[in-house]
Image (cartoon, rainbow, N blue to C red; front, side, top):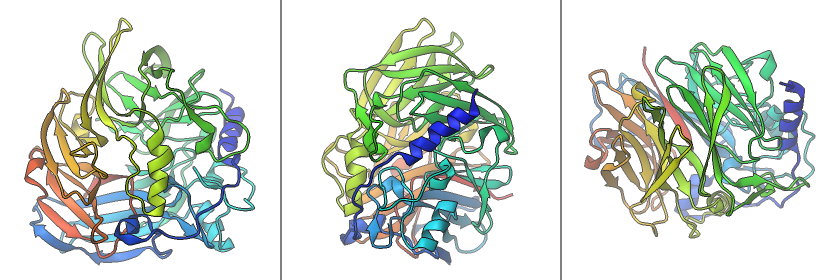
Length: 483
C-alpha cells in the first residue's frame, strides 16, 4: 500500500470544509442540559446517590464511557452532537460507595483551542471562523466516540485518526497511540471488534479514496498485520461486523459526492436508488472474498455476527430508511430540540449465503446501540439494544433483550421522558450478567446510572443512581473488571 497517499487523503478528509456559522448559545430547558458543555476541569471523583435497588455483591470494576462533552468556546457553539471534545467518565464499583468522575481527553486539538480561547479546527459538521491549518488527521482528532481496554490502558477512539491512550487510574491522557510506524495518522475504527482470544480487529475508512485499512491487533496493543481494501463505495462507515472467519464492511448509499469546500457531513448525499453493499473479508488473508447488495438503508451500528458450517453469515443491523437522522436530529439536539420527526432505526436481520444470495428481514421494532456478552462473540447468543416503545416516541426509553434468532425475549419501557444511552454487558463469574449504562431524565434535567439483570431486563433496573452532576450525553463505553 502507499501509506503516504492514504495519509494525504485522510488529511484532506479533515481539512476540506467551509465556514458555517457556529451557534452562539447553549440550549435552554431540562432536555438541553444533556447537550451543554462540561466544565473544562471535568468532574471530580464523588459518590453517586442510590435512588433505588441494591448493589450486587459481585459487582467489582469500572464502567468507562466516552462522548462529546465540550460544545462551546469563545462565544461559538458546535453545529452537531458528534463535534465536541471527548471526555472519559469512570463509574467505579468495589468497596464503599460507587463513584463517578470525568476528565477531558487532552488531545492536541483541545490544548490548542484552550490556549487560543476559541475553536480552531474543523470537526464533523462545524467549521470555525479563520480555521488553523490542518497538517495531520490527528490535528482534528476529538477522541470522542468510544473507549476500549488494550494492554493495561484505555484507548479513546475517534474514527478519522489514531487512538489516544488514557491512564485508567486517574483518566489522564498519555498521548496518541503509535500502533505502527506504517499506520501513523491513518484512520482507526471507533468500533473495533474483539474476539474471545482478546484479538482486536479494526479498520480505518477513507471516504475520499473508497479504501479501508483492516488491521489485527494483539491484546497488548501491538499490531500483528494489516492490509488495504480498495474500490469501496465512498460511503460513511461507522461500524463493521466480525464472525469467526470473516470481517464484513457495510457501505450504505450515503456517498461522498461533493469535493468543493463545505462541512464534512454536507459532502455526503443520500442515494435512494443505490444498493447498500456488504463487503466480506477473509480474516486469514485480510483480502476481499465477496460483495453482497441489499436494499438502500443507513446504519450506524450492527449486532454481533456469526456463521454456520456451510458458510452462511448471519448478523443484524440497526437500519434507518435514510441518512436524515444524522443530518437532522443530531443537529437539532444542539438547540435543545428533542425530536423533529425523522424515523428511528429498526432491527433488521441480514443473511449472506455462500452462493451469493442475501436475505433481509425487518421486524419493525426500534433498535439502536446493540451490545452483546464478550464471552460469546461470534456465536448465536442473546443480545441487547435500546429503542422506543412507539414510532411516534421522541426518545429511546426502552431496553430490549433479543434471542439468538433476533426475536424479542423481553422489553422494559422506562418513562417517556427518559433518554436511555447504550448499556454494556458485564459478565458474571457464575454465568449470566448485568447491563450498565446512563439514562437522562429530561423532565428534571438529571443524569442517572442504571444497572439491569441482563437475563431479566423486564424487571427494570436492579439499581438506579443519580450522578452528582448532569453530564453531557455520551456515546460508547466498556466495562473493565477489577483484578
